[in-house]
Structure formats: C-alpha cells, structure tokens
Image (tube, rainbow, N blue to C red):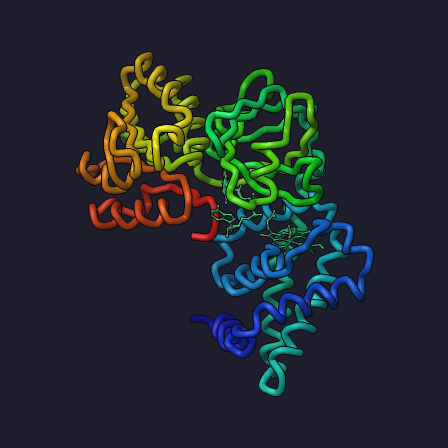
Length: 370
Ligand SMILES: Cc1cc2nc3c(=O)[nH]c(=O)nc-3n(C[C@H](O)[C@H](O)[C@H](O)COP(=O)(O)OP(=O)(O)OC[C@H]3O[C@@H](n4cnc5c(N)ncnc54)[C@H](O)[C@@H]3O)c2cc1C
Ligand code: HEM
C-alpha cells in the first residue's frame, strides 16, 4: 500500500463512524458557501441516501489504482454534464469536503491527512473535468419521447423511448434517466436492445417499493411524455474478438442488458453458443420469457433456461438462478455476463468462483451496491 493510500485509509477511520453527520455537514457547508449549487441537486434531498459524498469518498480511497478508474472517472465526468456541473464547481465541492473532514476528524486530523485528501481529490476532479471536456460535441443530456409503455406485471414495465438527437451506446451499457415526476433525480437503467437504426431504446424497469424513480417510470410515465437521458456508461459489453461460448445469467429486470447483448449477437453470431439463464421469484416476474423463447426458436445457437425461486407449479427449473447455473455446468471455457440485484449477482459470482471460472471471463452489473 502506498503512503498516500495509507494516509487516506487511516484518516477515514477517524470520521467513519460519524458518516451521516459528516454528510449533513458537507451538504450544509456546500450550500451555505455556494447557494447556487442547491439547484443542481434533487428537490427532496435525503442526505443519507445521496450518492455524491459516498462516491467521492470511494473514489478518493481508490486513487492508487488510477488506470483501473481512469475510464470510469472520465465517463463519470461526462455523465455529470447532465447535472449542469461546471469545472469551477469541483473546487466548491472539494472545499466543503475538506471542511467536513477537518471538523469531524477533530484534534487527530493532521496536516498530512489534509494534504492526502486534497491531492487525491484533485487527481479525481481533473480526470472528471477532462472527461466532460472531451464530450463537448454531445449534449449534456438527451430529450427523449416515450413511444410505448407496457405493464408486464404488477411491478414491471417495458418502455420504449426515442432520443431527439442521436445517442450512441453499446449493447450492455446503462443510461441514466430522469422523468418529470421526479425532477433532478437520475437513476440508471440498462438499455434492453442493441442500437437500432431509428435510435429508439427500450428499458425494463421494476418498481422498487417506495423507490422514487422506478415507481414513477412503471406507474406514471405514459406514451407521449418526455424524459431525459444521460450519457451511456458501463463496460459489460461483448468482446467481439473472443471466440468462447457465452453464458448469460439474469435475475428479474437484470435481463435488460442481456437482451441487448443477445440482440447484438443475432446480427453477427454464427459460431458461439449462447446459454441464457433467466431467474425470478415467480412466473409473472419472468416478464419477457415469451420473447426469449421466440429468439431461441429462431437462432439455433441460443438456449434459454428459466427458473423461479418461489413458484412451485412453474413448469421449468426451480431454485436460485445461481444454483441452476451450477447444475447445468461445468462451464470451463465460457465468457460470462451476470446482471440483476446485488444479492443475485453476489451469489452467482460465488458459485462461479466455486466452479473455478476465472474472474477475468466474468462481466457483471449489480443493480445497486454490491
Ligand atoms: C448498472 C445498473 C443498471 C441498472 N439497470 C436497471 C434496469 O435495467 N432495470 C431496473 O429496474 N433497475 C435497474 N437498476 C436499478 C436502478 O438504477 C435504481 O436503483 C432502481 O430503479 C431504484 O431506484 P428508485 O429511485 O426507484 O429507488 P430509490 O428511491 O433510490 O430507493 C432505492 C433504495 O430504497 C430501498 N428500497 C426501497 N424499496 C425497496 C424494495 N421494495 N426492495 C428493495 N429495496 C428497496 C433500497 O435500499 C434501495 O437502495 C440498475 C442499477 C445499476 C447500478
Ligand atoms: C471527485 C468528484 C466527484 C465524484 C467522484 C462524484 C461522483 C458522483 C457519483 C458516482 C454520483 C452518483 C451517480 C449519478 O447519480 O449519476 C454523483 C451524483 C451527483 N453529483 Fe457528483 N461527483 C463528484 C463531483 C461533483 C461536483 C463537483 C458536483 C457539482 C456540484 C457534483 C454533483 C452531483 C449531483 C448533483 C449528483 C446527484 C446527487 C443525488 O442524486 O443525490 N458532483 N456524483
């Protein structure tokens, strides 16, 4: 561990237990010193759930691995254009962060700790600013019209929208979405189709209990509504040079990026077998199985196995999808794509590790903190 990394980790232990208070203080300082920044943030701000501070802390603490994060930070900077973030805002946010750390670090907060955080923050901010600048030919966000909206189950909707300007992305990537019902609240959703000529994009959304954005997208958005989309992100894309067969594991609406990847394969694939495992609680939540089965009937290289964990009468596999994947193994020489809830992704990654699948062959997206 480098000296910088050691200083960052050591100093974080001084404030770690007071994270909630630190977050409140951070936002209060930021908005007091720079009232104009308040308008960039959501109307109802739940400080404890706001993503900014946690993300900065994580980014700063991983600053030692700049190559791994360079691409991520670049696209994060690009993504931040949707919040109307300007280069000068980075100093304001950095200043509030330092004030909060010093206040909660108390007497034990040293000059070295202070310098380490300032240095690390500066590196990250510079990468994000560069990412935003490199994207100046694109709009900060895209206006898109909702063309179709179909409720597929109690909690799941499939919607199709068309951006008014071209939005380039790759199958497997995700895009942040904001709707008029929850202004300035952005959440990411995976594009559920490979790029089309007409530019339209499908999203598969599950309304999460009291979730702000997902419930609006499932229950309130209608055809004709305008939504806003941010720059695409994510690296769960197909390696077109690989010749290995493929295993896709999807839980619930985790099917979205998998479906986009399958669609990409339908345009080019002649040689790779693709095995899709699609799991959900019950058959209603297997909301797109009919379409998957149609694709499997049409493309001989595609096979689909569906499983429910909580529906004993379902005429298919039963149990957790990770266990079903294990039953169909071994999978010694395959590329893997895994997508779904953090729990589902965690248990699938554990199963694959037990089956000796090398981590380098697995790409995954967890729909939350994994
Ligand atoms: C890379 C990525 C891709 C994603 N792609 C998709 C996608 O294609 N489709 C999709 O549906 N989602 C996807 N998500 C999840 C999505 O981004 C949102 O996190 C989700 O829709 C919840 O947002 P929200 O505003 O409705 O909920 P928020 O208001 O942000 O609340 C969510 C939080 O509330 C809690 N919560 C509230 N109700 C429940 C509940 N019933 N069950 C569990 N927790 C609950 C949880 O702690 C959760 O962290 C993706 C996430 C990531 C990171
Ligand atoms: C080191 C610098 C920064 C990092 C690592 C960082 C990281 C993040 C991440 C990962 C998110 C959540 C992802 C998302 O919702 O798209 C986020 C949200 C956000 N960031 Fe940043 N950010 C930084 C600097 C800034 C700056 C300078 C501003 C300008 C004020 C800013 C404004 C926002 C806003 C408004 C949100 C949404 C907050 C919410 O929904 O609660 N960020 N940031």
